[in-house]
Length: 304
Image 1 (cartoon, one colour):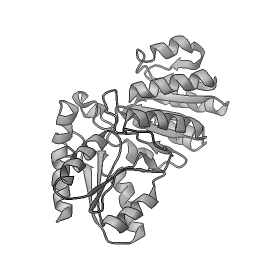
Image 2 (tube, one colour):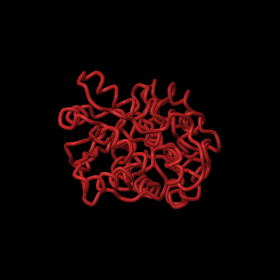
Image 3 (cartoon, one colour):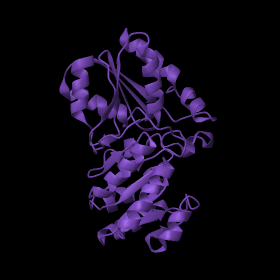
Image 4 (cartoon, one colour):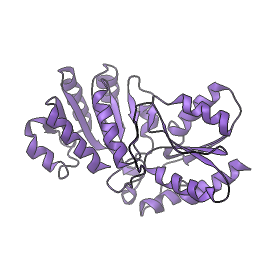
């Protein structure tokens, strides 16, 4: 994901001198090519995320298009007041790029896990939130963020995510993508957990259960139409997220279902406390109840 994002940013900076890369002393090496090619469109603000966001807001106010990049958990919480007051309240054209979505920095532990960022940011007016699931989707999301006039939070993994799309598709902010068809059960996922969901759905299909998989790449604005269709056609919904169930995808989907007012079998799969454990990403997902085995168990519960 990171490489796809950097390649896209490079293209954007090439064609539009208003595009600026802002860093908080994170990712200096991976920005090496960009810095050498566009030294006048690059700023490293040091380990000062709040200052980076404030500078980005000022630049946007003067017609620039800043892409402020750092680790997601630090961006979302160290700079939250500045995101709220300088960017969202003023509706400035700032693109906030948070890397290390969820627990993907698995070996670094809970201080580096962005598992509450959506809960803090989803409540902010004017802010669009996109959580791409693959390198191709990162590229499409970065272009969409550039074209959107207003604040965007782009929630990225790192550089190890597989591609889930085998062919091109139409990406629109606020329009989910149905990546598997099925009428027995709907699984709604986002970001780095999509490969697990697809693998489980393909395995369960062999048991005669048709699982619809929805990639909810935009958390805000949420695609309500695709969810209501799933309620009507499958009657059973599971949400899966590398995030706390409070304030994230599960909360957003449950709000839509509750307001729609039709009974549905529904389960949220996600964190219920701070993350714990260390190891590979797969190991940490299993330790925190969102691995493939946990999803299979949730499917059995909802299908009963």
